[in-house]
Amino acid sequence: MKSGINRREFLGLAAGATAGAVFPQVVTAAGISGRDIRLGVIGTGNRGQYLTRVMLGHRGIQVPAVCDIVPEKAKHTADFVSKALGKPVETYTKGPEDYLRMLQRDDLDAVLVTTPMQLHAANSVAAMKAGKHVLSEVSAAATLDECWDLIRTVEQTGKTYMMAENCCYYRQVMMVLNMVEQGLFGELTYAECAYVHDCRFLSFNPDGSLTWRGKLHTNFIGNLYPTHAIGPVARWMGINRTDRFKTITAMSSPPRGHAVHAEQKFGKGHAATKNKWIAGDATNALIQTDKGALIEIRYDTSSSRAYNSTTHYLLQGTKAAYLDDGARIYIEGKSTPHKWEPRKKYEQEYDHPLWKKWGKDAEGAGHGGADYFTTRLFLEALRTGGKSPVDVYDAVAWSSIMPLSAASIRAGGQPQEFPDFKKNAKDG
Image 1: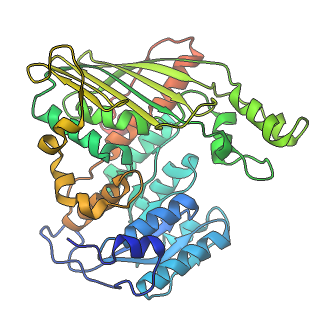
Image 2 (image 1 turned 60 degrees about the vertical axis):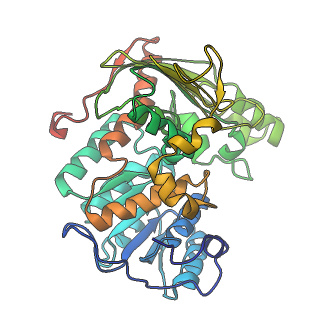
C-alpha cells in the first residue's frame, strides 16, 4: 500500500499532503476498519516529533491531540501535523499529568508513548485503562512491578500493546531471522549482543541539569537500556515462543565516564560535577535460557569511544555463525571451510519477506528503515485486529533485564531468576 505522502514530503513537512485518506476495508470485525486511525501523542520531544512524522507517512492517520510538559514542543508538533493533514490539533500542556485529560477524549483510538523511559509503563497503563491501544518507545518498564502492571492491564483491557523496538527490523537482522527459520543455523547455542554508544552528551541539558538519561545513571544500576541489544537475539532464539529466559548473572564496572565528561564540559566546581553517579560505565551479563543457550549482553553509554555502530550482534548455531561487526557469515556446507563470507553474498537469497514487500517504502525512515516497520506493523495490527508484533510478553521479558541485572549486581553477581511472565499476571 502506498503512503499517503511520500517520504521526502512528510520528513520535510511539506504542504499539500493527502489528508483524511480512508484506509481500505480489512478483514476482522475486531480491527479498526473502514476509517482512519486516530492517534494521540504523549511526549513531543525529538523522538516523539520524529515518530509522529513517520506516522504521517502512512495512509489513514489522524492526530487530533498531542501532549507535552513543554508547550513549545507540543505546539511545534501540532503545527506540522495540522499542516500535513489540514485539520486542527489540540495540545495538552498543563503539567506532567495533563496526558490523563487527553486520554479522556473519545476521538482517540491509540496513543504513541515517547516520553522519558522512566514514564513509559505508567503512561501506557493509563492509556490502556482509558480504552486506547499503545505503541510505546523502549524500554517498556524500569521495574518488575511495572512489568507485571503492564501484563495485567493488557490482559484485563484486551487492548493492543506494542513496544517499538526498531532494532528487530534492521534489514540484516531480519535476514538472519529468515535464515534461522529456514534451518540454516541448526540449533542455536550462543549469542552476543550489546548497546555500546557514548551518550554522555545526552545526559545533560545546556545548563548542566540532568536529562532523563542522566537521571537514569544517578538513580539506577545495571543494564539501563537492554532492548536494542536483546530484541533481535530474542527473536532469533525464539524467546517466548520455543524457549524463555531462565537466569541472568551480571557485573558492572565503576561509574567514571559521566563525572569526567561533566568536568570537561562544565568545569570544576560546576553543579553538574556534583552529581552522584551510581550506574557503572560498563555492565556485562550472561543470560541462560530454559534450553541451555547462553547469551552475553553488554551495556555501555558512559565511556569515551569512536562511533561505529551502537549495536553489536553475534549468533552461533550448530551449522552456522553470524557476526554483525564486519557483516560476516559462515554456513557449514556452503562456505569455504573455516572462512568467513560477506553477508552481501546471501542478502538477495535470504532477504526477509517483509523487506522484499515494503523495502522501497521504508527508504528514508530512521534507523535504516526500521522505524517504518514498527509504525506500519502497529497500524496493521490495529486495522486487522491481529497480534501485536512485539507484544507485552516480549516487552517485559526484554525490559526486565534492567531490574534483574541490578539485583544480580547487588547480590555480588549471583544469578537471578526471570519470572515466567506468561503465567497469569495475578500470580506475579
